[in-house]
Image (cartoon, rainbow, N blue to C red; front, side, top):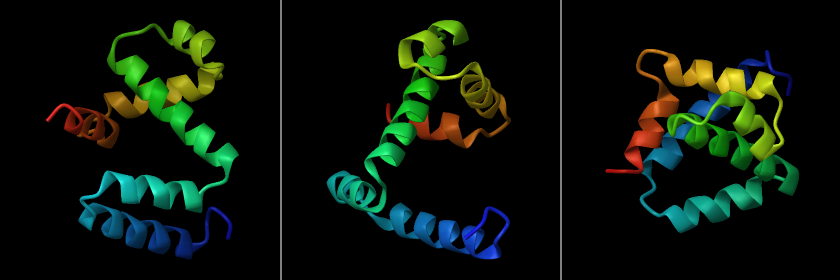
Length: 97
């Protein structure tokens, strides 16, 4: 599939609905580890780590140095966090509930 394939949205939507129904973090973790390659898992983990760092007000350049990520990825994460009703922020905040 390519990024503009309508099946991408269809499958992401379906997967989102399925994960939203599961109240078992270990099952979701096992599922993600089975679905993703080790490199994809590391990339997603790094992106989540950058969101956490930004939420804790760590400067972008320090996040880049600390996590070995490009400033472009960090800027993108920062923009996502600043959006009104940010899904990134909502997920982050849900951890403290």
